[in-house]
Image 1 (cartoon, rainbow, N blue to C red):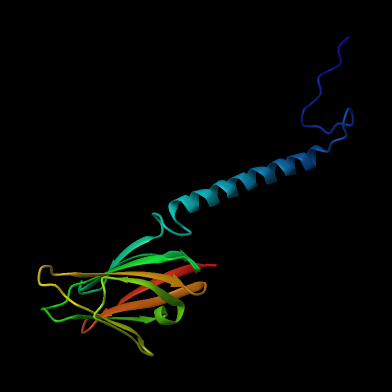
Image 2 (spheres, helix red, strand yellow; image 1 turned 30 degrees about the vertical axis):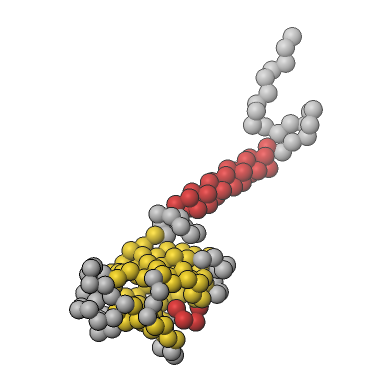
Length: 172
């Protein structure tokens, strides 16, 4: 004579003592953990923490004389590439001012091409770029390193034109 089949969802005492209520809670927590883990990995792959689709940004000021390509999200003590394109009028040197939180919270590691002049003041950093008659725009490649973590609001201004404001979130 065979014993009746046991219900899989009831607590047992033989061969091992188990409590199905706690086992179900444990399974639920495990599923939530997997969901959080895969969400975290997906966000990282999409660029929520640094380089990637969610982080890449290209902005232009209102009169289209300054354009900036940068990452919205960065990590403290990691190098970041900022690409600044300016369209100055005439053959005069382009004078760009980087202000806001930029001077206090970023350290410049490298500048390409070589600037004609770079001066730091209370209001920001003033960079004078030589312009070329061969092209209408001038590009400035800045490699910077955030000094501390936080949310920073900076701006880039071509002399005589409206400023280009950009925000960056720096993770610890």
